[in-house]
Length: 210
Image 1: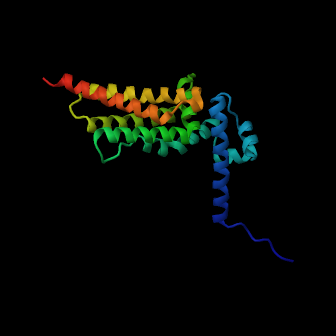
Image 2: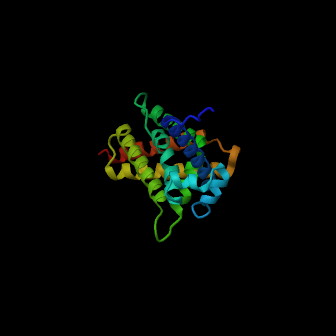
Image 3: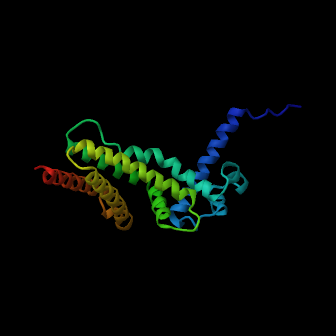
């Protein structure tokens, strides 16, 4: 009688990663449609086809799961805000605008869920919300550093104002795309937004010059 081979640790790890990815994909889709309150372990289980026990094996609770959803997209989102090292200031501004627009189009569920979490307030703040706000803060710092390097002559207060405005504009353009669908050219709008931010920076520097 043939004996059944034990599953190797490497195979178990691979299977575990596949299951984790299925769970995260399902949670991302559900949460981006229903928000934090509308997401449940049961709904995620049904969506991904894995039992709730498998979800709890990977994640402590719903908040831990949604925080992992935010963490998974963190690197891609943050990289999109990195201003290229080469080219004129206007070319580099245009390039980063295109990067951000493409990142939003490639992973809309991430920013959709993040904005929902940012707007939802409850007595005990979910870790997922804190995670997203942390991502936004890092994106702000990357953007502020880039603006300061591209347009020397701005005060710290002006860099803060422009970076805050640029980030808020990115949120608004994403919402315009969500509402307008295919009628909205997100890349063109982001390039327009970037040029407006750059023009504002140039005007500020001119006012700063005696």
